[in-house]
Image 1: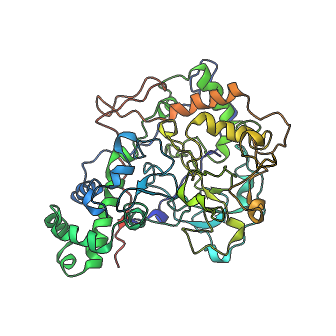
Image 2 (image 1 turned 60 degrees about the vertical axis):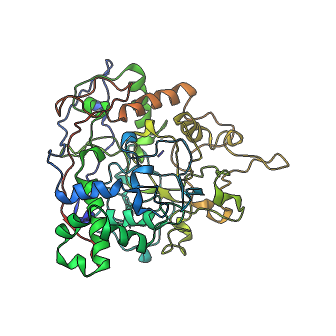
Image 3 (image 1 turned 30 degrees about the vertical axis):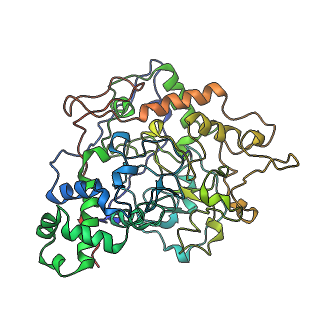
Length: 468
């Protein structure tokens, strides 16, 4: 719950990840009684197009300021997430403008399905179009009843917090031309592509047609960046201590084991309901997201520039950035469920960056409904402003059904402070250790975050270009 390139994402079946069967829960000594052979991608050198994309990814001259590249906010040394602790990144032509939302990681996006509304199942590949589907009341969803909840029709998939991009090429173009982010223009980008140091390579790879079509030239550049994200293994190494535990190569500490069990307990953390943590039937490593959307009622981040206007609200799926779902009031306040890999290395959580530590995040989940005064501000009369970042007409969209949100003021929280710390201990196991001694080297524990020069390689899914 905490959370095509035309890579032809719609052709990539996302495996269903079941909750942990009781027989496969961690043994008393922290071992895995049901080890699996994870199906990691094979290693391959980057293609010429991906190498070009890597250069473009790191080129600040493509931005309006001339000082901000993709890597400025998606730092490879921080799992392609921001290095700083700010809730949002500064951008614009003078690098002084607040972004609207927290910068997400670019890791593990290679199998993200396109946006759709359909049955609550990770295997759904034929979802109806958004404009024709009515979303019913929020059905109960726990770490153990995912199959029973499949009758629910839910929004799922897509890139960005609101799922508005279906392809990695579209995703690249978003921040590039956003005035609050890289703040570039078509003229700036085309000039750089035509005359920059990589221009000859771009023309050679794109063919003669790119010399006669600005649209094609731009599309080839975006394709190259997307190809880099697909091919470079550092975007999806699957090299965490948890992966090693799944394969039976290390034991959990007592705290990690307790946290894992709480994470999967539908009456306690219930985290696996939205962040399934089991491998697929074919050994595909878990992504720890169901790719669906939730309205959680995160407190308003009043430090954001946009929120200085009391009448402004970021409503996720129904706007303001996404415009095609503006009439879907049943989706206002919903944001995508992020994957939890490398979550312990992040510094801003939820769409508005309202929290900066995992302790704060776990407190929000445990206390939102039982002690709202500890989560939300008060007005001048001392009244707690519950759900202060979601206008009252849309509060019916909030999750008040699933644990730990199924409680009321004064009830005991679903998780004690120690139990929250134990879940965090488990979450730290999800941090990728970059391999330093070749692909066969794996981490020994989940307590530290090491870097490595030789992570496992990424899968190369079918691709086609998003050409005009």
